Structures are given as C-alpha cells and as structure tokens.
Length: 183
Image 1 (cartoon, rainbow, N blue to C red):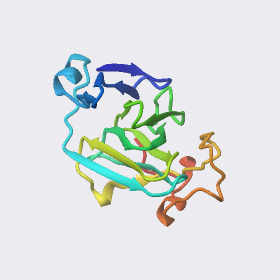
Image 2 (image 1 turned 180 degrees about the vertical axis):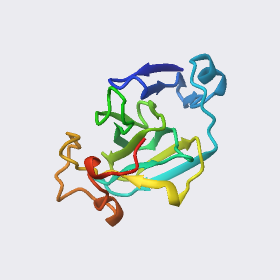
Image 3 (image 1 turned 90 degrees about the horizontal axis):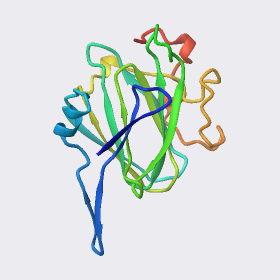
Image 4 (image 1 turned 60 degrees about the vertical axis):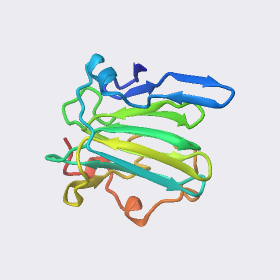
C-alpha cells in the first residue's frame, strides 16, 4: 500500500497494491497494520456506500463538527469521481484551499480526508458506486456543509452549474465565508 501526500499534505492518496492475473485481481483496500506503520492512527467505525445513477451528480461539500468530526477513506467500487477536499481549519496555512483528484474503480486509488475538511465529489460516469469508511458515527445534529460552487474556493468541477445534479440540501449550503461552525 502506497500512501502519498497531496497539495494539502494532510489529505492523502492511498494506492493499494493489486495482484492481477487472467481472472482479475486481489488487493487489500485497508489494513490497520499499514496505516499504523505510516503513522496514520485513525480508527474507522462505520462503512458507508453511495450509488449515483447519473453522470454529473455532485454530493457535498459535507463535514461533521466536533465532537463527532469524521475522517474519511473514500474509494470507488464502480465508475469514477472527481473527489474534492476543502480545508476548513481556521488558522491552518491551507485554510480555504481545496484539492481535487480523479479516482476510479479502474485505478483503485483511494482518498484519505482527515477531520477539519469539507468533502464532496462529482460522478464522472453513470452508475458510480462509492464506498467510504468514517472515523465517527453519523450525527445529524453535527452535520454541516459548504456550497459546492462557492466562487472563493475556485473548484473546477468540470460540469456546468445548470447541469449539475444536486440535492436541494446541497444547493442551500452557505458559502465558506458565511459558515459559522468550522474547525
């Protein structure tokens, strides 16, 4: 398992090693031993799965505030996504900066997003299936979001705003400058 830092060093790309033959492949998508060896002491407590049947679905930007802030380990089981993380840790040298990366079922890469980041993604293919681990349980009272298309963030989603498919809830999140409960 290879763990690589991104432009925002706390966000990591995880590349599991695949053992392939004519039948397909095998890989360990998560092993606590490798995480511990890399100095990433995160205990995951819940696995989530999300299916987006259409290309162009935007989910996010979501986060949970303390005391149930979540780290996430995101992977794609079918299809492909543009995965986005935004640093919302006040006082951080990368506050308000975002990073994005394309991950897919074909490449097998995963993204680790620590607490203190808003997270979202855009589906690049129809019938995209996402699986992600979280380090704390879902808590509706601590669930928050940032507007996906906040101009101050400068995220190039690669989809026209009119064509993006979002939930009503995600369309109504505040801009980063108006969000009162950050880290």
